[in-house]
Image 1 (cartoon, one colour):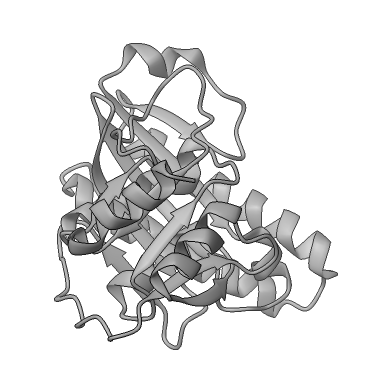
Image 2 (tube, one colour):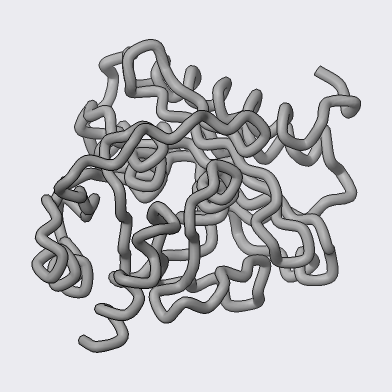
Amino acid sequence: MTGSLSDATLAAYLAEIAGRLLLDVRASALFSPKALGKAGDQTANQFLCHALREQRPDDGLLSEEEKDNAERLSKSRVWIVDPVDGTREYGEERADWAVHVGLTINGRPAIGAVALPGLNGGVVLRSDDPLPLPPAPEQLRMVVSRTRPAKEAVAVAEAIDAELVPMGSAGAKAMAIILGQADIYLHSGGQYEWDSMAPVAVALAHGLHCSRIDGSPLVYNRQDVYLPDLLICRPEHAQRVLDIVAGL
């Protein structure tokens, strides 16, 4: 692999390989669920961070599993990664976890790849290769946390008579819309930039609406990496959802 790879190809390649490494770690059967999550995080993080520093030495880097380096704030190009999004689901040997590799340029979610290694055969969704969106069903489906559904999401689902679809990681939830498993992802329970940056880049490339739940844009590579809420959905549903949230 050389530095001549495009940013999008590099993101997808790294997400796919990190996913394979995580499956190998999980197949070792050496760990309890909690220890497995920690081992997976460390293994994938080491690979992703070393590879990005080798391939894009002039870019900034922000990872959930690395100590933040304020030097990234002076960079226009910053890679944002989540080595295992959905560590709990990964440790429990579920399928709804993901690997996020994304590039923000001047705060904009420009490039993204989300690997879903737990799905049959593994799937990598990427911003440079958008898929056609499946048609929406008559009754919309809202994907929510399997352990703590956001109250705003539950309220919106009740208002539009949407079916709740519990799921693990943020990346898996966002990609569920592209894969035709859901139509709306509303989150308000607290997240960080690495939870949403790559999924948002992929979702935008597929023509989906992505914003904060007040309708404002999602901005990345900020000093405070807390980014607590987001809405990802088909564009035809966005204004209705935003109006309902504003009225809560």
